[in-house]
Amino acid sequence: LSSSSAASDVYKRQSTTTTTGTTTTTGPIALSWVEATSEAGFSARMLTASPTTSGPDRLWVVAGVPAGSPPAPYNDVWYSLNGADWIQATASAEFTGHYAHTCVYFNNELRLISGIKTGPAYTNEVWSSSDGIHWDQDPDPAFVARAAHTSVVFDNKLWVIGGLGPMATAFFLERVIRMTDAACDQEHLEMIIYNAPSIPDRTRYILGLSKDNPVPPMIRIGRILVEQGVA
Image 1 (cartoon, one colour):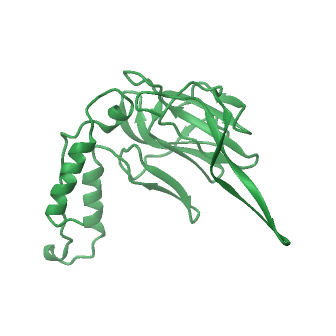
Image 2 (cartoon, rainbow, N blue to C red):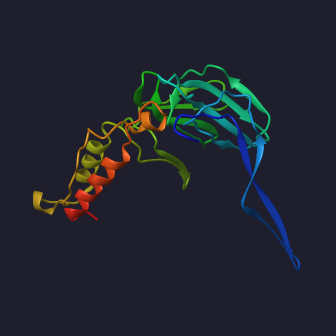
Image 3 (cartoon, helix red, strand yellow):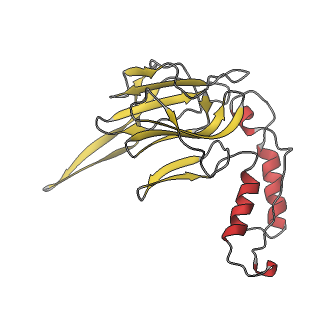
């Protein structure tokens, strides 16, 4: 998609079955995608989250934002058993509109994590649902507000990794200091932090709401850090 477009189409990856002697294996066909539907039941959107659940197997679409200005994020929830036919679980969940969030399936519940909500405003909210219809807000998590992050389930734990947000750098620095086994100031790690609030808003650029490209200044700052010995 371009930075100013949104879509409601769904594609699936084909698989192939190969038999060699008495062994049968199934795997993906390289670069072979098939359109499941050109227009699903949900409105065209971007920066959504699409977790999967089991028992029965379902593919979900949770919130997101349409193209246009100002952002008007959705708080609807949809699911499908085959990727082609979509059913609306709720038109208006208990959480406000979200985009650039994540949503994963953990402990038999869908978990919507952080993102940018109606406002717009970065948030660290976490919402849980066992059916995709009714959502409850979890207690405030330890991490700060963020968006465009990654959330995964690994080793029977739910992990929230990285992301963007106004306090992300300060929080990262604090965590490094607190987790460093240092008996005095001189034993702490050497770090260089380049705080550059002049970088254009990346989310607005992705959504097509601004023509100010954040990539050139990010490259320039990266080169400055390399010159300072950052690796």
